Amino acid sequence: MEGLMQRRELLISSIIVHAARHHGEAEVISRREDGSIVRTDYRTIERRARRLVGVLRALGVKYGDRVATLAMNSDRHLELYYAISGMGAVCNTINPRLSTDDIAYIAAHAEDGLIFVDPCFVPLVEAVAPKLAGLLRAVVVLAEPAETPACDLPPGVAPHCYETLLAAAPEEPEWPTFDENTAAAMCYTSGTTGRPKGVLYSHRSAVLHAMMVNFADSIGLRAIDRIAAVVPMFHVNAWGLPYVAPMAGATLIMPGRHLDPANLLGLLNAERATVAASVPTIWLGLIAHLRETGESFRTLTRIVSGGAAFPRALIGEYARLGVSVSHAWGMTESSPIVTFNAPKPATAQLDAEALLDQQAKQGRVVYGVDVRAENEQGAEVPWDGRTPGNLLFRGHWVASSYYRQPETQVGVQGWFPTGDVGVIDEQGFVELTDRTKDLIKSGGEWISSIALENIAIGHPEVAEAAAIATPDEKWGERPLLIVVPRSGCAPEPDDVRKFFEGRTPSWSIPDRVIVTEELPHGATGKVLKSKLRALYANPPKP
Ligand code: ADP
Image (cartoon, rainbow, N blue to C red; front, side, top):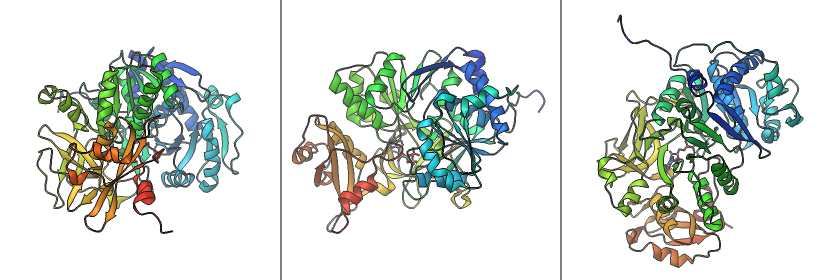
């Protein structure tokens, strides 16, 4: 209709154009493989990304093609995000912690013609390249010429140095415009069940998700924030932070592969991070380091955690260090944020203990998506904080099916089954109790493994915990708890069991507690319960 608002496509390139024009000096800080710090800014990133479009075109990349990255978080990876998506191709970030078999599967399934790789992952590409005959054309090492190792690649796959290519490339004069429903990026789920599955994000979904992440009751970055994107750029696009930070004009700090607690704390303090985002494993390691060394945070005030449950007891411990923890929930299939834990008038008034209970929940739905909890018959369960149901979500940044798997198309109502089980309380806060496949069902009752783990971590001698089901003749299944001691501690299994008394109904107290040095973690930092079950619940017959 005449006189209507302008229609402009929601394109990822518009984010970096905005940042370059209005926050040109805002810093992008990266730690290189050798530990050195490199500083650049959004103006430079935008210009180099346009030059990188020239490189991509020269290497034969066309609109709609898939281009892979095997890289940690850095300014160069950020340039790739904008250049690949910005020219209309698809940035397929691959998790380098996966097996070479899975990496080869993903690159073949996505038909990645090029791989951009950090020097430390060159051996991975060398192992994978022979399996991509006829598909892979070139490998570009993200480094200066002097840091680029010799690559042992099959005939027909050309090795290149990123900075050499960039130096020679013409600058694309401006960003192309196309439909906002064009594919922009692709992540594969980590394949804890079966082969990895591709999730294809559009320009529109990525831009809308990034705007939501900047809501005040979500991560809500401001231009004066300095966010440490610790969550890897291959894990659901680092939760959108490479789009979110430039959109807000916030400083972006990236640790590269230096994710150990001492280096991470050093970076957060030296670079004056105000906000940091990552999975609980990182925050568990960091708090153990602080306990041991007595060091502290200088500027950090907020942590955003997702990907697995953040233990309730640690929320209190971080608060005592002046850092508030915000829980977020979602998955690769939802870009990822669906719920974020920010107070409502009714929950802001709770006393300290009830507030901790509330903050340990996964949060409430943000505008743009919706969630429901269903019983086995598909009916919505009441929002009473008690009745568990299978969780489903839908919205602007939720997948409609997996890439090239039309049989996974969700129904007309668009509800995507998450495979998570949880309860929703009267205020709409979602609390996860389990993954469907990790459920513990004892005597017809569900026992929440996350609830058991939360209690265990409240024990003063326990650093990390995992609860799994073990087969039981009488009850069907019974919970088994596996704990890792805090440094210098040796908790007694019986003492840990006693700690549950009065904290959970007696029938849900784990029958057995096993103390071990380490829990197995998967490629995205989650505890591998399948491995624990194989070790402890169904040990192979001798
Ligand atoms: P994967 O590739 O392993 O599926 P995702 O990051 O997509 O990696 O994992 C999504 C799953 O992680 C969710 O379905 C849920 O089980 C778990 N998860 C995500 N956020 C949380 C959270 N805040 N608390 C508990 N579990 C979470």
